[in-house]
Image 1: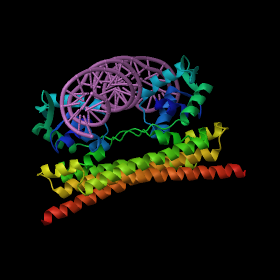
Image 2: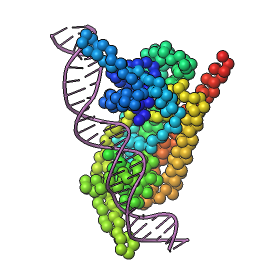
Image 3: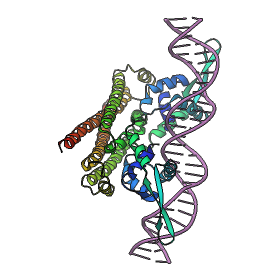
Image 4: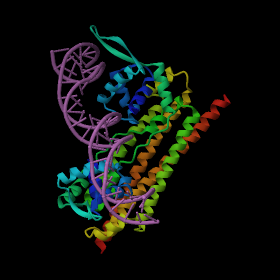
Length: 198
Length: 198
DNA sequence: TATACCATGTAATAAGTTACATGATTTG
DNA sequence: CAAATCATGTAACTTATTACATGGTATA
């Protein structure tokens, strides 16, 4: 159900076809709430049925058409109401920490490999989030640029500041995960020293 | 499928009934990989069918019996193999950051409320994780105590150190979330100053 | 003897994943 | 005119959530 609000958030910037929406999704709000295309199209249908968006048929090429979706007033209302609801936190399900807790059952070499992969994973994510951050800050992010141009009801500084704040939080989290995994590698070294000495 | 390995991890400490397992789960590995009782019982059935655990009927009271499950050699093997597999990272789905990114659509008072709830949520989790950490460190955690008594193939220091490492990672994460939310509150104050001044 | 705890689930639904499927249009 | 991109999905499956359901045993 949250996907619906992620899509509405994107549609507050401008009307889009399902395809555009899916593409834009993956380079913006999809970083915060992931969904594959196969989940986006059915959700659009449901949002249409619920009156949160409306579709307009526009020509595509000589003979074909495509559907452009716009958020309706009811959609904006629903989005604003959802924004003011309490967040439902999901329970922890952390596959890496589940392994880390039982590393004694793992080959030390395998444990090291897992920790190095963890570092690589978060370094990649960190780079992606940092790139988003840079593009948001200097308004070169196309969706932010269009949002700033079209959104007249909110302060431009606030629009940017909240997105910067969000991605900064992700970058911090990545840094935390990387630091944690490095400590894990150091711990494996220590345990290795202890067992070889005795 | 990960739930199965979380349950096997717990059963490496000692044989347990489904009920014991569920209870122990919630105060140990369930902090790392959550599951409700209603998911645990069917998974036990499947693990039994797959030969990862075996059940032994033990008397309960005068007329009744209960089933005590033990991990089999095949179960230990499967667990060890799973430990050495690559971690499958799940995509980001962060309901709080999704809101934070679009706080301009929210009442500032509501945004503040969300951030305060975020802080309260992670302060609660932090306290729980810290309590686990203390109980693991001094071996007063009943499951750790039994594990240390029964597990002869692994170094006691390593058994404890990996669990300490894991929960320290959670505590760090909680600290990060709390610091992030506090910065959000400060940001809201700043934006408030700017708009009242102009 | 009532209350808490032990014991063991099922059913219905919602959400998410993976793989597959097809055809039109634009561009180099 | 071939390849990339645009356009739009469906089907099957797995996982997880929520709510409900029942009865025995120990203990104060």
